[in-house]
Length: 94
Image (cartoon, rainbow, N blue to C red; front, side):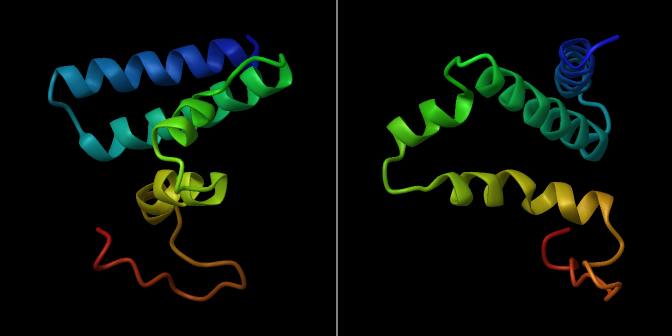
C-alpha cells in the first residue's frame, strides 16, 4: 500500500459515511486526513492541488487561512492536549 492508496481509502470511506449519514466525526477525520495526503501528493507531482482552486475562488485567503479552517475541527476531534501538554479548550468548537 502506498500514500495514494491510503488517501483513496480515507476519502472513499469518508464520502460513503457522509452519504449514508453515518458518524460525522469519523467522516470528517477521514476526509481531512485523506485530503491532506492528496494535497501533498499533488504538490509532490507538480500538479495543481485543491488549495490552488480555493485561492482562486477566495483570493482574500492565504494558504495558512485555508489550512486553519481545514484543521480547526479536525484538531479538536483528534487531540486531548495542545503542544506542551496543556488541555485544549475545544468546548465551543465541538
